[in-house]
Length: 409
Ligand code: NIG
Ligand code: FE
Image 1 (cartoon, rainbow, N blue to C red):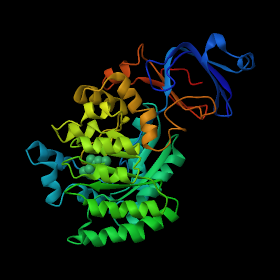
Image 2 (cartoon, rainbow, N blue to C red; image 1 turned 90 degrees about the vertical axis):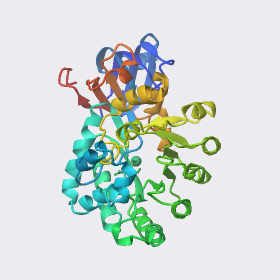
Image 3 (cartoon, rainbow, N blue to C red; image 1 turned 60 degrees about the vertical axis):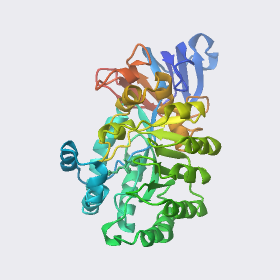
Image 4 (cartoon, rainbow, N blue to C red; image 1 turned 90 degrees about the horizontal axis):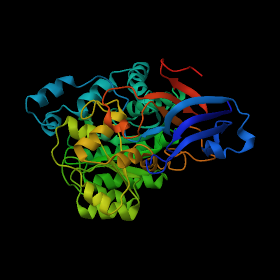
């Protein structure tokens, strides 16, 4: 592991543009941050480390994408065309398309192909400074196929320089073979799939799609009970298309996060606050399904619920492979501020994974995971659209990505 002193940089250690240090340095030893701060306060013991000059660039924690569905077969461009012609996302799902059409394609795709396709969706995130990503299953919906997706997710973390957190989303949709038997399917999820996959070490958290085209409150609760019995944290896709009350239920199970939330009401916000549940907002999905109901930003602010942002990469509602674009959308569509979106992809996103002590913030003793940006001000991260801004990514002290224009040190 390379010990080094990264210097001549502007430091934003917690993704908070009000807490920065100009002319700063980061000393790395054995892959961890040994010291960070203003260069003129550098302790003598680090002065002789190998030096890397970052020419005044900004440095933030590695970004965290805390909600993705990166592993699936096929694509849904045909449904996109239908939606452009006026058919709603919900209607397509009720007519046998939507999630279930991706389930058919995913079941028919082998593990190697799924890995290669998911890697193509992951690498643009890594080139934007992402060093931790959550990946959900949910397009298999039988034990063997869900296992295949979670194995691919784990393998991505072994082959690419990113920490992968897996989420079992067996309760994403009703598979066709269980039509009319949703409660029986939930029994399969709780009694067979979840225990088997958890025993195999494939599950870091458990998620449910609680919605009128997903699962009911009582079915969602059964999944949360099963997860809790295994000691696994829960999260929820909730209040995306209607207010079904999933957030309040999830808060009762101390959910790490409740995600989407366009139709969330004040009681749900209060429940999240009391439980310490993070609000994960997904502007890519809001944009792509042309939603008009805005998530309750003012209430979330008033109750000081931490707000995270994620790409929600998936083939149906958010074919987005850019966390920077997601930040831009959160500003333009949700009227979030630059400090809010920076927190949303760093410390709050890490909190949504239950990993706030590991990711999303730079501090002494933590793994040296940081992104180096070619910008004059941090606001530019949310401002430019479609332009590469990340010049270098350091993970565990090693350079794992460098844009070709920059020295390959
Ligand atoms: O996060 N809402 C449910 N799940 C995904 C969409 C899945 C799909 O349409 O394939 C989401 O929006
Ligand atoms: Fe999602």
